[in-house]
Image 1: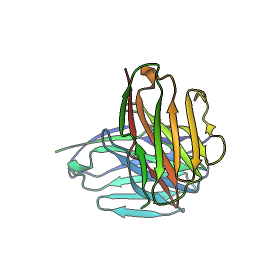
Image 2: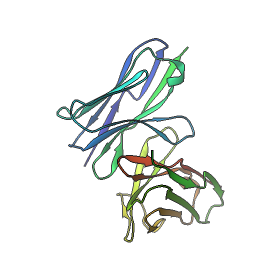
Image 3: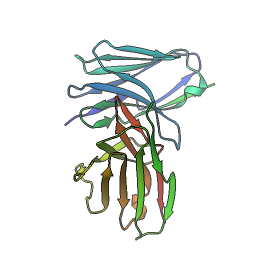
Image 4: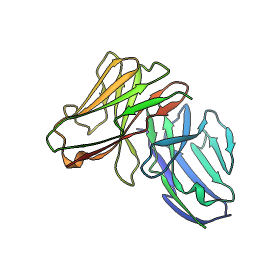
Length: 108
Length: 112
């Protein structure tokens, strides 16, 4: 059974700082997703990672994938308050299974 | 990207009644759609996989008779919560897959 583990589950950080969210998964997979969710809203797709060594960047967010280690990271650079949200990783193995999410709170 | 639309966005119903939620893929055909449930401050839990023209596949612990899924066409799947109770109050989200997964905007169900 596929398990997806995210850490940390909660992160409070100052604006301007860097931090990384980790996502480990238990079995091989074709693709890994990162999503953002704001309170009361559905999911916003951030990244789709398809292959080992894949790295994608959008603004202050960068995601990477190591399929051998079954590990993906979401790195936040010079955080700003607008990035406060819950971030989910999800792994696709015929069906998409989500991690528990990381609630990110960025203090001004 | 592709668009998945859910309706309604929110619904309030009385305990014991049934509620139907629709999930449509607007600009592509989807033989498979997925239904998730999300309780406050929790992650998305997969409830079932909806298969066009055949029975849905339910995850362990999800009651088939309570959460009826119908996938009658390549662009529409419906989830009916039967005999709803307050504990069924949740955020229900559907998704359909093309080159990647696309999610609907979600339906907030409140059972009073």
